[in-house]
Image (cartoon, rainbow, N blue to C red):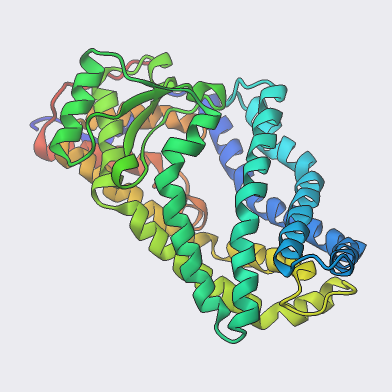
Length: 400
């Protein structure tokens, strides 16, 4: 486009927020980096406290004395451990996931509502997670030298099942999903879906503002459960049709390019490494915690050791995980620009995310912590695209 300056256009979008708002976003984002460390510390401390208490070996002895089946013993011990550790970590969860979000104006959810969802999440976890862990212990006892390999494959199967059923079974427990009403937005999204191989008969709006004031949409599910879902925040913040097209085009890019399957494959590899590390490090970590009464890796009373090792590995692998996701986000941006051609709509939407994601981090900070590319670079990419290809609609950068 003649006389169009991508750098100036990028700066205009970044200037939608005031310097104070940018400073607040930087504080929130960099504080979030520290949360990764402190959340890991809390998790490790919770596991150590449970191990040192000796409650799980005593519970194991009681179950064995009652002559209950080994499967029931494993399920009971794992559920008790999960319940105790979640209660120990609750004060931290309240601070990190509710109070901090509230103090930065990123949620309007009342504490009672947050606690209700916390309780629901833990109930679901207590119903599902012990079954996966039971499978691990069965593998440990029957395939002592290769359980970590089979365990990673089992985790992959469980992950696929969860992704298929989540939009139908799990997500409606937390939010109300309603079909998008007839009108220009639904028509535009349906047209985009048909053009890009995304189911066009499942387009929903959900009350995402109940939990968060963040501007978001998603294409979730696999196979027949796939659907397009847009948070009502998009519409409460006066999104125009170009923004909706730009954002939903991005989310459709994730679906069309099968990012969830690629991410799942990567997580299987991470699980493989994690379980292998557990297999090799379990005795040393158990000794380090000072736990008494645990009879080895096949004893469910030692399950908190799994959590300690996997938590440490998850923290150490943060740069790898976020880089993988960041590459997928960049690819989804390209998909939106190529298929929808709404560089200004996408940029306007991205500018709104600066409220909770610092716009211009250093390259090292981005590489270590950012699971999305820096907003400033994403907008510049969109403006470069506009300079080279034009756009469907003219820019409408409205300053507050």
